[in-house]
Image (cartoon, rainbow, N blue to C red; front, side, top):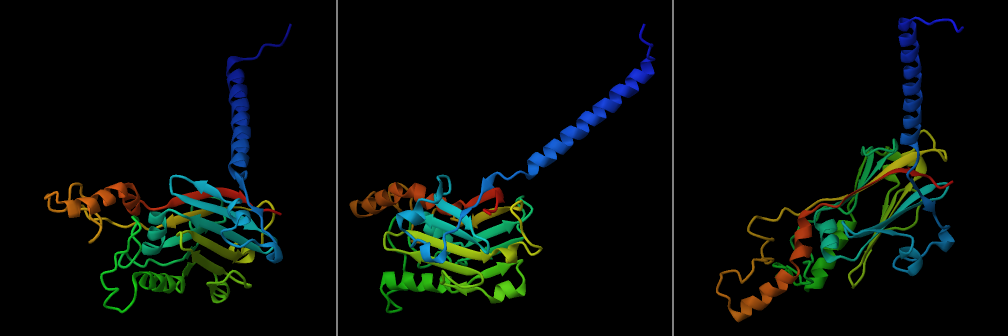
Length: 285
């Protein structure tokens, strides 16, 4: 016969094995939580780097339909490069008027350890309207055409940057309106469609200050500001109230308001910030 085991000893053995099982489960879950969810793509050599807007440049991006923006992240042994493209007018307007920030988190979570804001917020005045027209109350008085005024404001926005969390050496090495250089490079181009093309290059040793390996995971956050539209509607000159501003229903006003109603979904997106986090990306090594 098998030796008998007292009930209290069976209970202790059960608790012991239960604790072991929970320990293994905890270790397994912890290991899974650190596993990369995404992989950075290989960054082309400088000689083979495609021009923005070409098929080779666009095809390596992924599109976020909710935020109406395409993005991609790439690295070689030295640099991390982020590419962004937007063709939606309201998205482009929002990025310039309310500013656009890229965040980095080397823990693979959603904490902003480092951030680069580029372009800085330019405000809605004199920016492109989502319905394709311009709101330029002061353009004629400034002696500039509407497009010249917009180009001037965009140029001003591209000459300003805000960098947080990086050391002084990385900050001092920053070059704006540049696609090449040894430090942080920020570059934006807006064509006549309009389509916005954006590249941000950061040295890996500026992000992983204690060194980096192929097991490093990190997160990238893409975030814009938003335009706080008044309760009565969009800013001055952008009313979208149906039936005309004074309810008269006159033919002259009705056509304009019909056009604004058509673009109402685009205009409303101005009040919705872009917020994207890509968690636990693994470097391409």
